Length: 398
Image 1 (cartoon, rainbow, N blue to C red):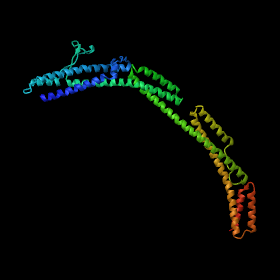
Image 2: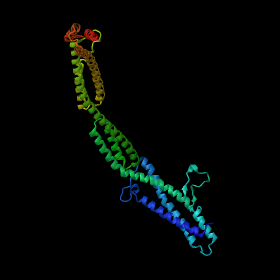
Image 3: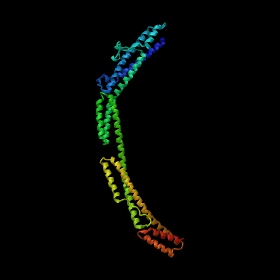
Image 4: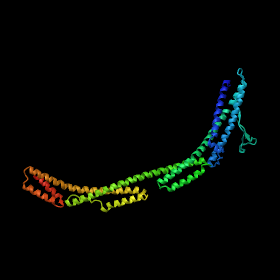
């Protein structure tokens, strides 16, 4: 059995609980979302539809029930307090203490009668049922009802508060996207159509509109991402076209050098054993690179830049292929020219050695030198014959 001190402590606890519960219920009732739902505080009563109506009505009914349950608990605690006031401090009555305990902990609160559906009644079953419950159990029921109602009211209120600004933000972002990139006109038009429908839905079905807002936000964010990717691709393409201009100049210079090297080789050197130097790239093909690049520039200027992203790759591959061809042709021609130059240099060194050895007037060496100089003066120089003469001159010096 509870002691008098325990009863007093519990009654003080109930005073705190009821005060806190009343404050929270009043604060929820004073919220803009709740007042709009019920048409209070100068707000016209909201005409709800669809998902919002399905969720709002049970929540509102539950919040109304809260006050009924609050009154029942308050009355029950009031009865317990009156019983407490009649308890003698010197000789407390055990029966009174027991009665107070029953009020506080027993099923002392009779809930309003609830209609029994016909399909659940027996022949002699009542049309209504009543239930008794303890204050603590009823407070737990109230807490559940409050949480359910609070969540719905707060969600609806937040949607009403946030959706107008969100819609304005959506429209502003769509305008920016349309101005920055003209690649998505149909998608932007479709989103604007859904945005108009969402605005019309805000007042009557804010919960569905909030879900629609999330979907629109994701779609607009995806478009923003694609616009930024497109901008990045255009920047890279501009850099690629600038690099292509530099590569075009490099190809032109390499081609010129290859032609000159081959012409010089053909004029100065003839080899019976070496493979003829490969030809440079075709002049017409090299010249066509500039025309091709100009067309790519024109496509970008006309706004048709996406195909150019692929076209510039093909252009680069072709230009670099011509660089390789011309590079190989120049290297092969220069190799033969370098052999002729090296033989002439070697001949000069051998002449200096012969002079140093006192053999500058040697008739045999002089004859070989004259023949070698004649070959060097010839156009083209027969490379293998010159090699034999230089080798002969070197052998005679040993």
